[in-house]
Length: 147
Image 1 (cartoon, rainbow, N blue to C red):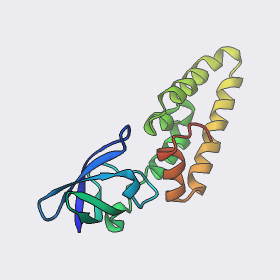
Image 2: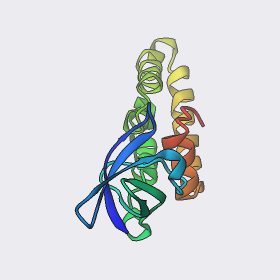
Image 3: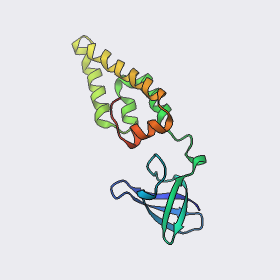
Image 4: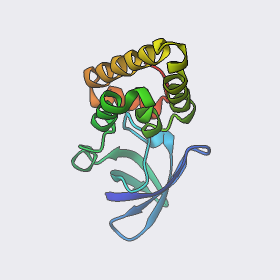
């Protein structure tokens, strides 16, 4: 059956799917069969067992093209020294660190600012080299803040 995810809670790892049949089904992340965690609004294909959803797969037609990889890479290239790509990926602490190192680095002859710019460029390269799935698993799901 097809449906859409109405809600998903990362803490309880449970959610609700609205099926195309008009019914709502609860699910546990154990039944999730995709590499990326469920997201609200994502289209899914699942089997129903009463009021529960089982064997839930992300709808591949809907899932393609929603990666944060390209925007994050472009932000790392053009505004990476300011940590903008970190803020985009949800890493506030790392973004603030990069921003402050860049801004206050000029007090130390600019050397820290140059170093943080090199870090941003390395992250740009890494983002481009990784596949979409690997990027999502590492930086979105796994919450890996650096490299």
